[in-house]
Length: 333
Image (cartoon, rainbow, N blue to C red; front, side, top):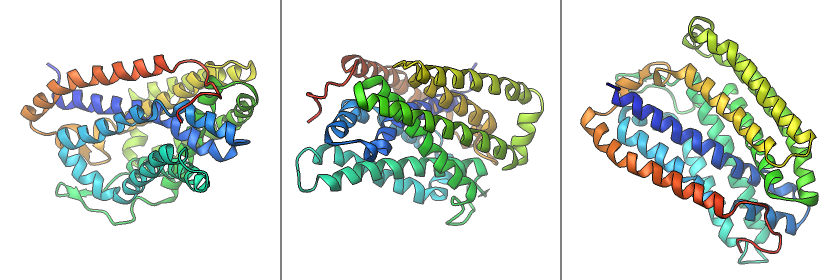
């Protein structure tokens, strides 16, 4: 029999990963937005993600709601520890979402909503990276409650991971625009993707070196069997994805750079998950300890078994309907 708490941990991990790789590229488009050469390019950039960005954020709701429902202790510990970055992230996503509608309805205030789109994307990405860094550092828990300080989430390491996520999302955004655009804008994004790829790989290297020293558990896990096997395999997988990324950029391919960049994120997610397991809030709260009673897990699982395929279905349908290049003469507005 499978342990329900670990099944649910897998579901939430899947939701978070899906959110990162889907909403990551549309946040990346927002981060690159100010570098567009004119209003026409800005419209194309926004129209490339306008039909799908809302559906991408469904996975954030599923991950956060699932954590609250099936791992209430983890939710109760993580929220006070990361209250500020999570609040700033949500506010940024709100401003960014409003900008989608309002920038098309005004001329006088369009620069304001362009700034909101860019600022919301940048702040949301940076705060997600900050939250990730704070989790990797570890959250202090005592008597089943958060025992740290108000500013524990802010450190040099969390700022580093925040910047890394911003650069990584910019890479996803640039490769997405390579896939969805043509002409001068595509060529511009090919140049940006090259530099963002170099920056992303540099940050992956620095964070990978520093992570084992954030907690002795990480170090032991990565440099002792069986974790050391993954330590040997991961560089090879990263090298293959890196080769595919740069080969696709140099050859002028449309889709290969995007999927190679997504692969880099998936590999990084696997590495972080391997560092955390079996903890859900490292270093002191395990998946089993944080889980709700089995009756609650079973009840929630029934609905999730129906809900997740539906979300996957309408997400796939939306991407299929809006496949192909963006027509500059048509769009969201």
